[in-house]
Image (cartoon, rainbow, N blue to C red; front, side):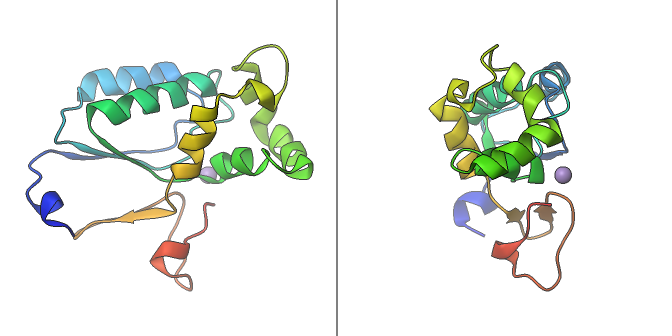
Length: 153
Ligand SMILES: [Mn+2]
C-alpha cells in the first residue's frame, strides 16, 4: 500500500454490477456525493442488459474527475472489449446483450459508434483490486490464479 493511500482519509465505496442502468447509477452517486479523497471501486459489468450502457460509461468517465475510481473488469465488459478486434467475439457479445448495448450508442448497430474514450475506459479496467483489508473482484476469487491474473467472470 502506498503512502498516499495510507494517508487517504476518504471513504472506500464498492459498487456492484451496474449493467447498463445509468439512471440507477446517477441516483446512487447523487446519494454518495463523491469527494476528492474518496475511493470508489466499481466491480464490473458496466454494460449489457440495462437500457443505457453508454450512459453508464459516460458517468464513470466523469466520476474519474470527482474521486479516485478503480474500475474492475467484468465478464460482460470483457466480451465488449474483445469484440473490437474479433468478429466471433463480437457475435458472442451481441448474443449476450451487446445488441442492446450498441443500441444505446445509436441506430447504426455498429461498434464504430463506440467512442475511443469508451474503449479506452474498458481497456483500463483492472482484474481485481486489493487493499490492506479487502480484495475486490468481479464475481469470485479464483484460488489457483494469482491476484493479478484473476478471471473477469
Ligand atoms: Mn458478471
